[in-house]
Length: 277
Length: 266
Image (cartoon, rainbow over all chains, first blue to last red; front, side, top):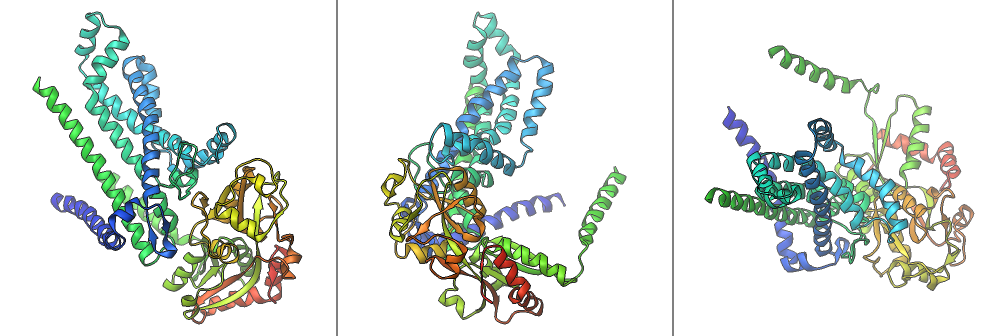
């Protein structure tokens, strides 16, 4: 019975994967892999399918989101586990986890109404930009990164901290040279999980990124991501155009697989290193 | 534990059953497609339902091409389309022109530029003109706003203005007339195109080749950028669809469209 349930979940996933590849791979073969990935001409009405600007867009926006996620998420986690009285932790931790429950459309809406005009008036550019998308995604990714980092930091034995302080290190030295290093695999896992969410986010990004077809040259330039491309055009795409959108899905799939493999490799390597001592 | 599961199952059944209590009996007519036509179709649907009790009309957006596809798959009885049908579509679908709409080229109200030639608009949207200074405006970069590929408004714009040239890659893409309007309303450097009927004085519509974008100039056929609003059915319309289309062609329907800024056909 349980085996059946487990198999049905996996088979569902396998069916979706097979379908995406079945629809997408022929068009990649037809257009040519090099052209598909490296060409900047996305004109589906005329049969030209090049997704290079979208790949750059997805990577740029995700990188920006991870900078925010890393700095604020891990920082928050360190604060919560090492430098806060238990009463504060009891309030803050559930609040941060609550952030994860806010629908992405709400983040996008706040981005459009507050963030985009701010960027347009004070920083320049159209406001709809890599920066806006990165900030919105960074905030969305924050609860994931913080929660998992907190768990990773709490798993570090107290003796590490006590030993380091007893040897004369300052709090900050202890934190960044001992505890963070010990929790590294967990924190990397948190960052990569956050990255997975950032790469896949669609709605909030469509609302604040501008969706232009050009490769962005700076963080104030508008950008279109792979996911936005699919969402913007799926409603009316037909024939080759629709297949090209599936092919975009294939590329996204490959990117996420690479990220997940990196995550597993890094955490296994770290675990191996710790055990070998 | 067991009663918890039973309670949850009961709650689920109640929720699903309550879906049936929408207060509506009978099948609703689905009208899907152009975001340009959508607000007008909603008004027409409202008036139609009030004057013909028992008839229900559901209006949705999605873009002209999405509307045509919905009509093709049978998801909608009527597809709304804000461009002329393509050759391959003309054989399969029956178009009904319900009104004519001007295509407005809009800029922020603070923009001092009053009008442009068709040539200039083409150059701007192709990305060849990068600063407002080059067309008589202040020293600001030009920010282009365009619609997504399946949009009827975009097709009409491409056919009437761009012709062979492609719209610049740098243009910001938005998904509906409303989104374009919001963006241009808040950005002093922006230029976009949208349905004239939906501008409603909140933005400046530029004169094209010297002709102002007003209702009179569109009806008199002086304004060059005009496109038809179509209600498209696959083959012959169903009875319910025909009923709605007849209403739209009748005096109250056409008067409503004229009042809202479109050019009537009857």
